[in-house]
Length: 496
Image 1 (spheres, rainbow, N blue to C red):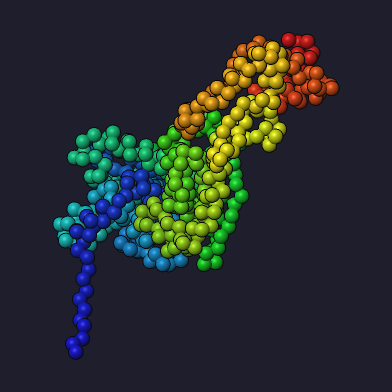
Image 2 (image 1 turned 90 degrees about the vertical axis):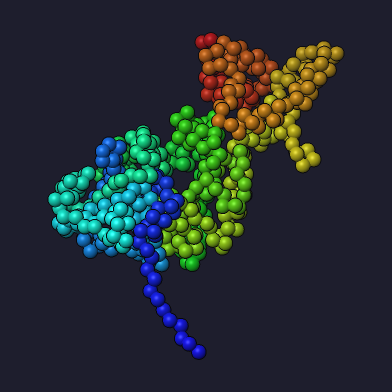
């Protein structure tokens, strides 16, 4: 029986490098991959520079640890790190491909200049050189050439650091037509992407723990997808799960209803469509956001759940279980975690829906006398006007017997014609509900209505303190507690 024989078959450089350009990087994910490398190198300041003018370029400069010439050559090798190797807690890399594949997806010439321990080195992948030579030819440069590169002098003046330079930007705009506008647009998109992806790592102040990131001198402000600065954001209990003796932290949040968001917060969240697309899991690897806007097929996206966000923190030691891709833009939860995540989803989805439906609670559940009551009927629900509301009771008592039936008919018609469909569409949209009982500037109407309600309630309360408390617990005055309290106090003192 014949023995098998072997043949070493290395990839053909020009074809493989051109093919790898189509892995699927967008401009913003490619830039994020370069920022990953800078953070992994312990950089505290990262500056992104770009120019659409001849010669156009994109540069990323960081003050991280830098590299010697030997280390830089190794970093320029495709597959420079084994993805199975254990990585440090700040290491955001994975396959040893990001620097090359991300860069060459956007340009035809990648040059990296590094400085470490007083030594400066520069190496370049030039796809035109590779095509001409038909081999894996890495081009090196001396210091005089480095000085001629965009921002090469900036790096030479630093104690240490790295410059990643993209030139021959053939993927930004076809045939350089409108390159300046196309590059500006892509950089704007990259700014928003970086502000979200690195929001837990960025710090807009120099000299403070965290990374200072800027684009053409303008700081990249972190964007918090949970709107934690808004006091109405709900923090649900954090849960911890163990997989392969590694901890995974799950932190659910419920965003405030749109009526409690400022216009700026709504715009930052992307408006109605942005909110709906952004619900779901936010998966972080070493505090770097990997993917978001999906429930990982564990539940459906709904209008009434668009306020739900679940932060999932995973260590880089579990990459193999999350099937992390080369671009670090997708991750799939392992089967051993899915059931726990599904249980959490069920809990927070109910809380998200409750943000829209809290006004339908029964009166006795929240201490407020509502004008509308919500009841369950045959597996569904219905809304009725609260017949025990003091104004309804007072009006019915004031009417003669034959007119009471007209009031009953009116209330029944209002209940029967409750506009469920329209209210659902409005509440699930980006429009703000404006059902204020009284105009903020119409103090006279507010005051007169409060006086009439006080007259209705006074026979049923022994003192003014009890009456004041009752006034502040009845809709619509319960919705503006402070205004009600202040107005009634002024009425008692004869100031109004």
